[in-house]
Image (cartoon, rainbow over all chains, first blue to last red; front, side):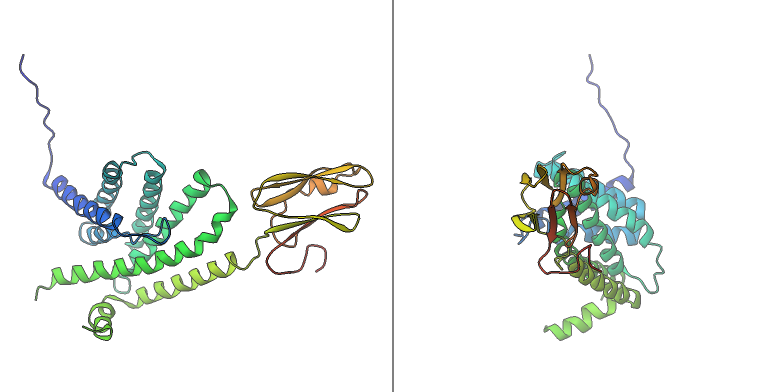
Length: 174
Length: 132
C-alpha cells in the first residue's frame, strides 16, 4: 500500500495572506506581554496589520488576515472556543463590518487614522455586546463603557498613525 | 527628537481634515458617554417606606427579596439586576405591582391602601416621577 499524500493547492495570494496573518500574530503575542491596568484595555497592535492590508490589498484580504489572526491566536494562547476567543471574534467581526463601510470614505479627507478609530469603536462595541448578552448580563458594566471607549479612541488614533507612517515610509523610500 | 518635532514630522502629515473631524466627534462621543453613564442617573439605592416611615434602605447591587409589613398585610419587594419592583401586594387594584421594574433614580412605586412604597435614588437627588 502506498502512502497517500494530500496536496492542497495554494496560490501566491494564500501565502501572502498567511505571511500577513503571521505578522499580526507576532504583534498579538508581543502585546500579550504588556501589562494592562484593566482587563480588556489593550492597544490592539495587530490591527495595524489589518489597516495596512486594507489600504493595500482591499477588504477581502484584510478580513482573511484578521480572522486568521483571531483563530490562530486563540490556538496559540490556548483559549480557542473559550470566552476570550468569542470576545476577540465579535470585536474583529464588527470591526471588519465597519471597515467595509469606512473604506469607502473619500480618501482625500479620511486616512488610516479615521479607519482605525472607527474600527476600534466597533471592536469595543462588539465585545461589550458579547459581554452583556452572554457573560455578564448586568447593567453595572455600563460604568466601564466610557473607559473602554476612551481607550479605543486613544489606541485607535495611535494605531492609525503607526499604520499611516509605515505606509508613507514604504511608498516613498528615502 | 523632542515631542514638538515628533508631532510636526510624524503625526501632522498623517492627519487629514476628515481624520481631525473623526477625532473631534470621537472625543465628544466619549465625553458624552462618560457624562451620561457616570452622572448617577442610574439608581444605586432603594428606599422602602411603610406607613410613611423609612422601613429599610437597601443597595441595588445585591439581589434579594424583602417582606414589608403594612396595615393590610405583607408586600414583597424584589431587588434584581440593579432594578427593584413590588412583586406582590395585598392592595385590591395592584397598581404598584403592575408598574413593573424601577431602574432610574427618582422612580417610585406606591401601594396605597397598604401604605408601602419603593423609591430609587442615585448619587444625587433629582426630580422624582411624582413631582414635575
